[in-house]
Image (cartoon, rainbow, N blue to C red):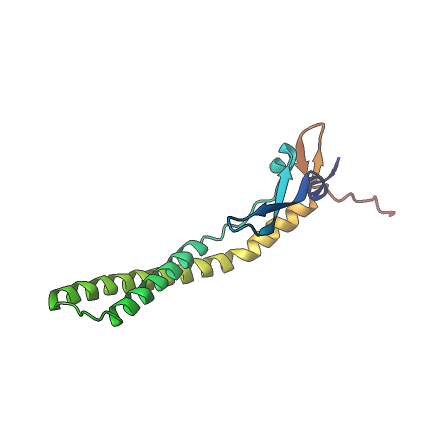
Length: 153
């Protein structure tokens, strides 16, 4: 029997792996990576993580921003010029990309606020997880009840 957080930490190992490789030009370089290994027990006892869903639309907004800036830059540097119909098509595409960018930013803000609102509950659940114990015999987790000593009357 032991604390869940100690069991989890003891069943999780981090290994740093360094490898040397030679590039196509003949130069040697070193790469470094960290591997995390968890036992089945560690996976079972792992604390629940809070998903950061706001990162998905934020990444989409970043990609759309780069695409929009590149498109405007290419259009500004076009020496041949566009026909009026071609220019109208480019403007329509840019407006659609700008609308998608605005939507991605708005969705990021909404999901970020929801994430921030859920943080207190997440911290409460994490404190509860840190107070749990694991019984290997029963294969269960529990929080020990506070024992009250009899008072002298």
